Amino acid sequence: MALNWFKKKKDKSAPSGADDAAAPPLDDGSEDAGLEPGAASEARHTPEMDAAESAEPAVDEPGPDEEPAQAQSAGKKGGNLFSRLKSGLSKTRQILTTDIDDLFLGKKIVDEDMLEDLEERLITADMGVQTTMDIMEKISRKRSRIADATDLKAVLREEILAYFEALPPPPAEAAAKPHVVMVVGVNGVGKTTTIGKLAAHEAGRGKKVLVAAADTFRAAAIEQIAIWAERAGADIVRHKDNADPAAVAYDGINAAISRDADIVFVDTAGRLHTKVNLMEEIKKIQRTLAKRLPDAPHEVLLVLDATTGQNALSQAKMFNEALGVTGIALTKLDGTAKGGIVVGICSSLNIPLKYIGVGEGVEDLQAFDPQRFVEALF
Ligand code: GDP
Ligand code: MG
Image (tube, rainbow, N blue to C red):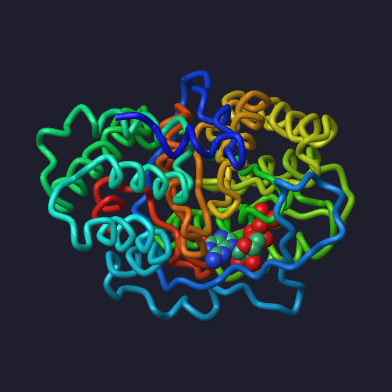
């Protein structure tokens, strides 16, 4: 089966296939957490005067008097977690389910046209060109088993799961105390929100949590993390805006040691990630943490925004090269039809996907569960 759609369109609109290249394997991973999903809601994107490259989403952070969305959903714990995941993924489902069913309307057999269409739909869902070609090849090898839509879906599901299962498993929960998690990513991807969700989760299971507000780029960023920390019942270490982020990180870890905290989340700035100075600044934070506590940070959690599609992959490569990323949190899956990026990320980066974000509320972060994810999709 030829990759016809790709051949026809690559000159016009090829997404960057280079992004699908394999990343170097990592020697570290991170622990799992039984997080729960919550109600989906839209991200609030607004233009921002930041000269960062276009891959960087411009997002408005809540101001001091604006409460994080966790306030709205904090009391709604419980509910049907699986259906929340499903509703968070509703846009992606539209492409991967409804659209695939459409392919079969009025057709009895799986023919070349249909496969070409499927290929187009996988690319539209942002699986990436390389991953799509790979999947199509595998489908074509199993062609004799595919008689109808149900079979095709089953094979597709199988192939997607195979990517997830090939990833290194997250290692057992670390024994280090305090366990230090440095959270990185470009501006607006959801670092602070993800820390807020994780802090609430950890505090909820009885851990003493401390947050270091090392995104000192502007006062509002410090206020935002302070609000999340307060709601989570976590301690916070903060300096004035424009303070040296490494100094905040150092003080944070110091405080965590003296207060006997279990886990520290270090929030970082994400502007201008293409400029050497930001990467250098984050590397400095990393080195500073290690100076105070030899194995810290125990985790480097990279936050990626699913709505940025293939750009997320290039961000991952850049951060991984600079810092050695141990796990990924993929946010805003509720806001995109391009959830195929999950497959793209898992197939082309050798980094465990730890969490997925399906909304802005405190419960809208889930530990990534491949089986459940695939079931929610189809
Ligand atoms: P940061 O700059 O990386 O710290 O990003 P923030 O944590 O400030 O998040 C930027 C925006 O994305 C905020 O409006 C968040 O509420 C929103 N956000 C974060 N995670 C999710 C998610 O999983 N789904 C949705 N819909 N919005 C999210
Ligand atoms: Mg932030």
